Length: 376
Ligand code: PMP
Image (cartoon, rainbow, N blue to C red; front, top):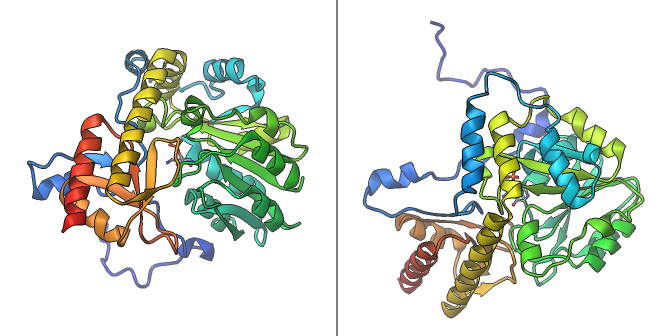
């Protein structure tokens, strides 16, 4: 067996220096780490915007059946899935590109549009993967603060776009704030961002927005003359975060082809494809998940407000709220009680926590634990 020294000071470095400055993908505290010190603790995962509800039973059966066939490679063009998505969205099947989660689409968007020195425009605070998509390709990040209601400021984004801008990320609902854009705002963005820019509308929480009475933005995105893509996912409203399936609705054949070229051939495994397809067709389960999420979200918002917190308006499966003290202290104190929540890492947002909507027991457990922490 080869011997490796623990001293890595003389190891060769990577040829792409921009990567050195980037944080590695996060390793959130897992249940095992917390439970080790206190085996009796009830662990509440309210930090990653997952669903507390299991996927559709039909999806679970489809995945179990697919397991018996995994000696074969999966369909590299995900035909059954894209046919189903095409039928419901109206986007032609060949303009739908599946990804290993919508995170893969975010990474690809950077690779296919950004060269060193180009500008990438992002709202802040927003989803941190956007920043990486800029940085790994040598792009310069241009940040545009959110509006006071936590939605993307489309007019400020249009004003910040230059002839060097190659990629713009917008999000509706926005993570971490949870608020949506109106179709009128999306239309302004679609028509106002230069045609030399890929405009991405990240709709990871799309289904929650629609369930809450929000507008569908696909038709107004299609009015854009420049390149565009909409990203959605099975991770949130389908309770399938663990199988990693997201998708791109591309505005043209060329954009779809560009995303196709960026991916690995078998990027969505056979079990995941079967599970996502069955979940897509189980509308009753999706509706139940969305409705339970809405009920618990409203309880969380009311409970947080009663404790003096100031939540952003949200339609998503999470609530972000301003607290009266550093969020890092609250997160650490809650973790000791088994409650895992997130906080905003952006300068100026040191007092903001982000809590994922969980089960009704999670809502009660979180609010009781938070009350204790704030009283101490
Ligand atoms: N976009 C946003 C705004 C998100 O919040 C997330 C996940 N938290 C993603 C994309 C990525 O989701 P996934 O890769 O699971 O589809």
